View 1: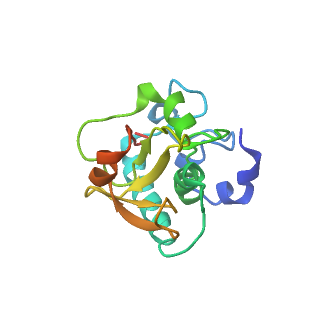
View 2 (view 1 turned 90 degrees about the vertical axis):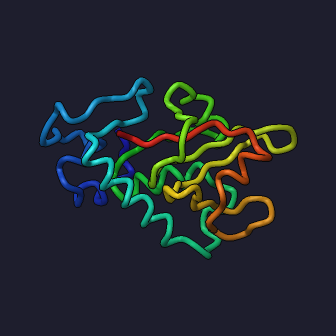
Length: 170
């Protein structure tokens, strides 16, 4: 259980209070994904939660928050907007992507709210993570030439960086 969520989780609808230990309204509507730290929710809740993750990420556009902390940004977009934890304790986006390789999708445009992941390489071993806007772009934290949270092209990044895939809790 994640103790630091505290009061934020208490204010969420019961169907989203998956981290507090409270019983969900419909226990059949949720499962634990193959990785114990990743929570999967019913499809209807995921759509709403995905919209909330996008809104949370967009609210940070133009700020320098989460500088060099893209994996935390992707996690917090879900955790702080809807209480869904996609997994903590990873040292980099590359580590998260490697640990969840079997859950990542690589085909198609990542749906809005999906976390999008790139593996690290060479002199940049940490990889990268962002939140998809559903149109081929994603909200991204500072990376190389950008210093603020910004919108980036997923396709353009895929041309130069090793794409790990996307993940949408559903």
